[in-house]
Image (tube, rainbow, N blue to C red; front, side, top):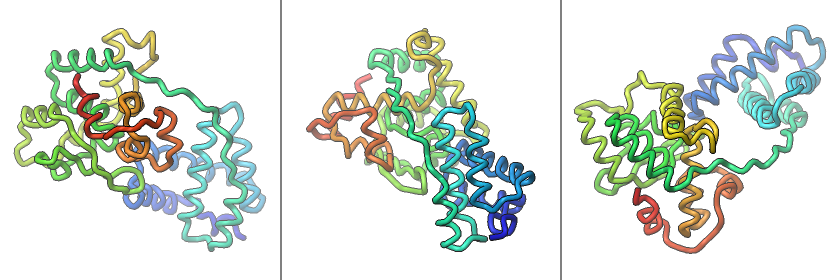
Length: 286
């Protein structure tokens, strides 16, 4: 197998792979950057490597894994696996041969950081006093609807059904799910007076800025000492945990959050018996 032709690590192929991730797979900007960086590093590593592709992959992983967290190693393996499966220059047999050399390290189970209910209430009050509609909207979408930050920032008004109080979300891998929205979201949107605008958030608001908003909430309220720096996923973790505490069924929470694997949802929850919508309303008396 010719390494250069089969793996196609030239600039054009890397760019095509990035477009595939962003457009066809609907990966988040963070994932696209991470995966592209991995393939770019593989391309640089290959310049000083003379062995066959399978040795290149094996040696690259070994070289890059020194003194790095297992989560980082696992993400790199995922990037390589996705790239190999996508690569139009490889036959199915060649793809399987290379993928055999990819083994994700066993990640240590970490207990997710959960924001307590009284802290959620304090955040809601704090944001209301600041009268920043975009920050209010982000908070209620992340915690109230359990959206990922990329999902929230990419929302269009056409995805919202105000009568049914639902949002149609396109998540990872272009998978669709329907999630409920709080009355607070509808109230904030009305205040924003969007007019004919399609997007809820201006295109100028990037993930980095939105992440800084979330970090600021935790810092200004003095919660960093307890939880560390706040990040958007903590709000998703928290709504999953709070719904579970109130009796929501695990499959319902999995559906709400758009988790592909049940094991991901299990990190935050315990299975209990009740009706999700009733629990949802009960949980959101902020």
